[in-house]
Length: 425
Image (cartoon, rainbow, N blue to C red; front, top):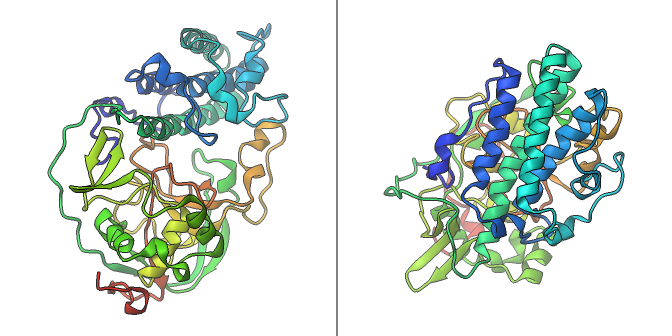
């Protein structure tokens, strides 16, 4: 079992059925966000550990802000905001909405208090219930609610990633939730799964929900390629670390090497080496490093360097999507987001929607790389094979890991190329 699923709170995770009742789903998703915050103190909910993370209190408020701003304001006949100042405080990046509180300063928002944010959520829920009665059958209303639910699920995952980073900085190494440790289970030997190239259909087919960046569906030519049958494990990446992988400039992209040197990096985020060997910080606190579990919390720079050391490469996002339905591939969407070598850019023919909601994805299509799949922190039912996650190449506080790829459709997995290793793995 993985980092999040061992938590007691994991039993409350929600299966989101796209064919289910939208009003009931709204209630379940909104309630689950509150459940994720229950193990935390009010102090935990207020602190921001770095500019890229947000306080839990801010996540709780922003997801209410989204429904108030994009749905209640549109559909309520006599709309009045819960608190006018919240329009600025809890706007994330929607320039079309107006001014925003600076992202790096979200942890300075000691006011409003957490209890007021929770009242805000309750107020928005009650007002949304009234709209379901009046507009629940209208397609335009339902599409906005669907977007709001998937937006909230994205923030549910961010709550876990941001809380993990926050608690890791505490010298007490506190746990977010309980843990019933299980003995390590040996990872299955990896294999290369070969795929024939040719013309592939890439992108969402329009059946069910998708974000705008998954459209339009288009054709793309692929060369023959192979993907590893499973994700890279901690044991395998530890060999790279102990082989001096972080001290070899020949393995790194130039910008990645500068990033390693500037930050003095020598191992993945949350790993520590002590007298008893390697350990890692988890949502259950500091734990011995489990060598058999999939590696998580590495950047695209680290993933690319490891792939070079292993005599392989990262997949393209088109390769990943083309192969995703193959039953021989394991850990595709429930362990770690998987870095690809693909820059986050628009598909041919992409057009951002009109209005502020058009800022949801399109304006970030620069200086980012695509991750595919899903992680142990991703809400159940939130992912699709066409889902395009994206982060800068240096980001590693997300639950991100590595699936290797290589050219050609060979089915045998070689050991790391001898030319790329100082010592035998």
